[in-house]
Length: 335
Image: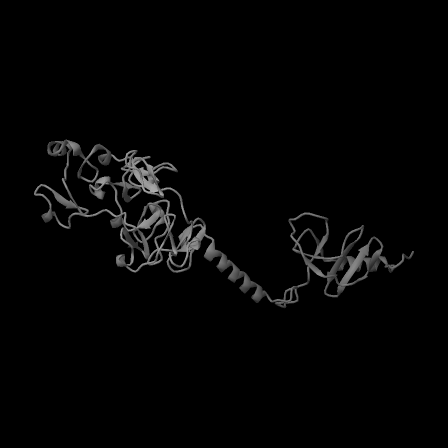
């Protein structure tokens, strides 16, 4: 029996053809466009491509390779494997080495911008923030943070920025008696209904905190003020003298001066019954009774061995991360 376009094959020939079949169903990532379908099947090997059905096989033109996703579904087609001849050439005309090099470069570029921890960032002075490697710290403006664990180099998180601990406050008493309070590690203006905040700030728990962010990253800022710090674009600086009155140079960026104002460098400048502790003349103690005998307003011996009021002696918080999301730590109370 003979069919149009097909050669009659003997049983022995059919067996030999079957032995040559290299079709792998459902495996691989390359299909040969135009092959397969119907009740037959097709395959290719080192000798060429063939179209087969229940009666035998005949030569078929070599099809064009088409990339496909094996997991994408669609018609059930035969996926064929090109024999490995030992060459480093790929069906796309490139080489294994070139493909590997391109993939490695792409992986490196991806790692340099997307991250889950700062250890994955390869650039100098980079940290991982919101899944992106960003350049910050040193002289590139302070790094953003949600908690001190986000900071490096001994810095602490204050007001959403990694800052040297000497430039932050823990207690409102660190801020002096000029109507400043300690909010999220920063000495900011105090406020009340009778004494509202200046424009751009909102009175929260008795402290003036920024109302809204004007920027979210350095990319939002201009060359005149290239660093986004606490939601505001800040000018670059090399020292405090480079900044406007009321600002100071924090790691290369001019930002509002929210630092505590130390009053002593040694106990010799304090009263005889006081000691210089972290830049402030304090009454030290071992019991609250000692403090009560000195001044009823600071009648509690704090965790740091200093006479304090009840809020500072037993603080609800000392940094913003001690509070629930959306709250601020103002005068040691979550607001």
